[in-house]
Length: 276
Image 1 (cartoon, rainbow, N blue to C red):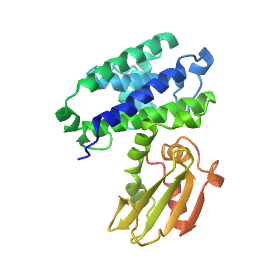
Image 2: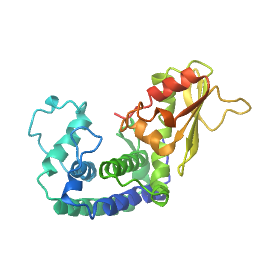
Image 3: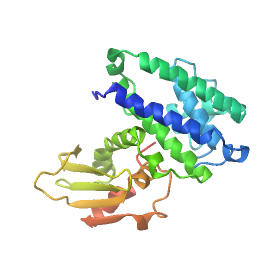
Image 4: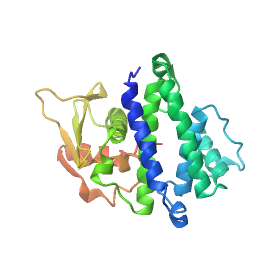
């Protein structure tokens, strides 16, 4: 079970909600309708999705599907069906109505989460990453909302400044992504036994993510006295966009450098998109 500090996680979650509010608060109609990298979704739909998930966590029932969801190529599982039901339900709201609903919903969630007991925070239950603590679920929520902030930024051509990037939400999002790198390196990337793979993330959000393959690929702080067998260097935000399947690798290949066993490094990057 993953035990996480409640104030630290809530600081990141509440921050990204504020950032989303500030980002979309003054958008014009064309910006609200701008297509994102998520199939079938524009900016309005992304905010509707966030509202839907947070409403569900407050106990709201998922709206009834108005079409056969199996006809939508981008809906691949039950969570995708739930997301699409909320998005379609809220499409009739104007931008101002949607923004007001976002503010109401996040205010309710902020109150509920602030009042949640430590026992409730640490209680094991469903998360998109498998059974884990509710605190882990809220870190996943921070990651999801943070990814969607950058989906919107990409759609409207307003990239985050360094000061807008730095903060607890970004740190928590990358923490959450790091936990999946053992799976990416070992399972998806097929790094062989004995591999020591270092992802050197650069830029304002720079950090090291180290994975050792010792029977099973796992995240490690370092490799002790050993050197990595493969190194991969890329900007941290680009790492997140590739892992989320938001940008094509081919268009960004020149921004990634490799060291050591390049074949393993390239294979890992080719399979970096683990987010469903």
